[in-house]
Length: 288
Image (cartoon, rainbow, N blue to C red; front, side):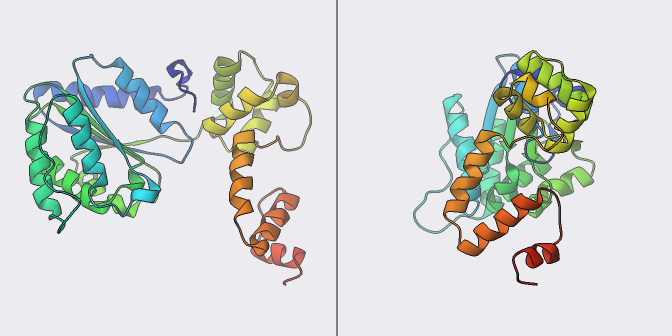
């Protein structure tokens, strides 16, 4: 979604929940918020909008999971230590890349001391794309959250659905020690508000319904199309809208490295242009 925080549409309830959780830390009580939603619904934009409101004196530690690093033990913890060092909360990393790996609980204990080093200053710790976090980091973070109840610290964990690696964090929410915020896809009117803010145009009801059906309510895809297409292209026609160029380029690059049978399958899906069954695709390809 766009970086312009003025384009935060349809997320007032979620933003208020984040504000309330942070306000609760003022009584020196740590808080946990888990933000869950599909890719492209604006989870990171929501968090950026919240962080932009905070007093500049608030210490913000940010880390993110990465698909290529999900097997890098304590990769997320390393990011948090680097952020802490940049803010003057310097502590030596409790492990090195050489030699045996430490126990997650030992790293959690060291991370707990790092959190306490901030004293009474408010701290917000954000882990984005947590579905790709390494399990040892999540175990260490859960260790801290279970024990750190007397500091003005807000933990924010952001992830996509179906993330079993986050079971330690989810258990804290289920035990009433955290709040779960769901970020849904957008309705057609909300996409209309987004396009109006993004491109300065007001779409007809028909165009909005078409855009909603094409993007399945994804603000990321709708914003990309608003950037690339003019009003006439958004309003005209009855068929599907084109894919955003950035999406098409990504798919073509991945397809170029695929086996021939994968290319044939993707071509068949493109010809159908809608959801279909595997059996139907097999018949199209002469494999049924």
